Length: 550
Picture: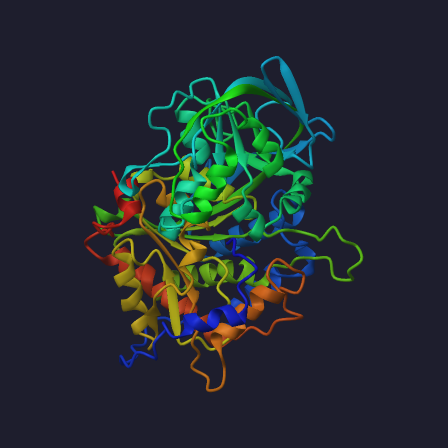
């Protein structure tokens, strides 16, 4: 899961008031319980130095995948990968930008201005071609969003066919966080659908306050990854943008000279009214973009298994648990003695909970009506790629998946008294979570950090976009232990350990009582979904339900 590092304990204080006290519902012991020693054994293996941080495509991740498959096989779960195996092996392309190859120039009235890479513009590698170039006229499209339900139609009255669209980074401030994050994620998709051949994104003064342009330059050296579809194309997409650039403020101003409105006026408009969506218009001149990319091929597996249902009709429907098994590998900075990002909480914890949940379903002896799939996905840290591949190339019919329960980075370090369920407000799964948690005297609290839009930032989001209701839990910010501040522990983890070598068993003390409680709750959630005669459904006022349901 991608979480902003600014989440520190002091910023969480205001959120704690929203989290209530303990539910006094009488605890009901399930027919099976999560076992501490099982979770501990999984954590010790998956977060060990021997796995070298489980980076996608690495030997360490392959070992983790085989461990997970071995556990599934030992439990007697049926293979649910490709060709009768537990593995869905995914072809990936790793792309890097060739140094000094990126070029950008602006031409108007016979005069051409060259922009300097790293100072005036940046770009990333192309997954499609090793040499890419495009020259086209420019059209400013505001934020580049299209959402009638929010009164947004930035392409209204504009012809962008065969042109490069120029858009502001970010989005209007009054958009709801989750919906706004989704709309920001699909800007490129909308541009392609409109016929654009390239995108230029403008750095803004407001963005500069949050993240300086120079900071973004560092990431141009980072390799990027995508999955290759069965048709041999990146993400199976035939349509593509031929060029892209992220442009600094001073360079952007040149493209607006003599235009309908100067860029300074647009910046002033969004500064004075953060909710504004500036109207688009054609720009003068054209831009040429060119770059070279190196490509490397690799593979990495999702691991999938199924416990078949027993109901003659409902057995062909699936509850899918997901947890990403990958992490970020080894630190390149050799000045540190500890260079391995073990990923104890991110996400050895989620995989361990899923494995123990699977064991509980098998050992319970229950005849669950629906089938239950356990899916350990790869490449979450590369952009939710393993889950996205599965969503687009499912090993069971997509319309047979009734719900996704995602297990991503539960912070099992304190005696949590509540849980937070991302996605709870969008479907009937919110009620399911509350019912399951109440069995263990745990209440469900509202999202204390909606500005983070976490519902769009983990693997379940790829299935949500296919119309499948989803939910995933994290430990809440209250504690059952007197004097322990759960929010402070949670915030300290993100401030000091998230995506760092210190996210390991040598530096963190796992609260195994909390780990078993968290697992018990997730088991109850899946059991409820698997045996409810009615499949989960989107709530009528959910944006995601309206957007993606059949």
